[in-house]
Amino acid sequence: MRIAMWSGPRNLSTAMMYAFGARTDCAVVDEPFYAAYLAQTGLDHPMRDDILAAQPQDPARVIDALLGSIPAGKPHFYQKHMTQHMIPGIPRDWMARVTNVFLIRHPARVVASFGAKYDNPTLADIGFTQQAELFDHVRALGQAPVVVDSADIRRAPETMLRRLCDSIGLPFDPAMLSWPAGGHPDDGVWAPHWYGAVHASTGFAPAEGPLPDLPPDRAALARAAMPAYEKLAAVKL
Image (cartoon, rainbow, N blue to C red; front, side):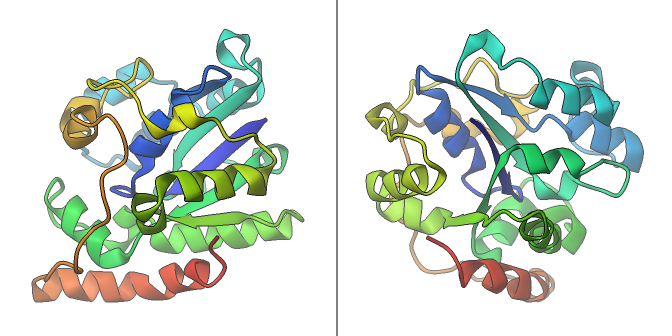
């Protein structure tokens, strides 16, 4: 099974990759279109040069790897994808050949977390509208895409991971509930900038508290993302 997990940034996505990576039967890949996205957009992200050097910049090569032999001969392949990477220059036809899952998080939490690491974020940077577009694309392919909320996973990791696995026809493995501290061998080269908290973890963080208070410009950004979030939240597990 090839699982494409679609989220925006700062959305429990790395912890979810670690959960699947803790299974002995599952290979993982970390944001394989990142270099292609940077090459085509020219955006100046943290560690840009390192990312461009570390990954193929040709999306066709990335797609070949996603659909080719699964690393280490494992039966399952978990692919951590960022929705904002799927710009018009990156094909989507390959998505018909994978099981697509959508990982959501409340926009206020995403904006607060992403804004602490990235100056002047825009709606395009945080991936919500692209996530809704990809959700519609997957439905048009004839799939019934699964949606899971990161807040629900943090409140009840085992319950939600069992439900997620059941929904995609994958047996649950208790190994998904913990991982070694210090990162994963398949972390992207950008990990030192973004993954500090998850590198210090050995499992999912506990449930979050109240929504953060945001300054006016960030609050406006969160409000702009709400329709896309609410669309997917309406059909979450």
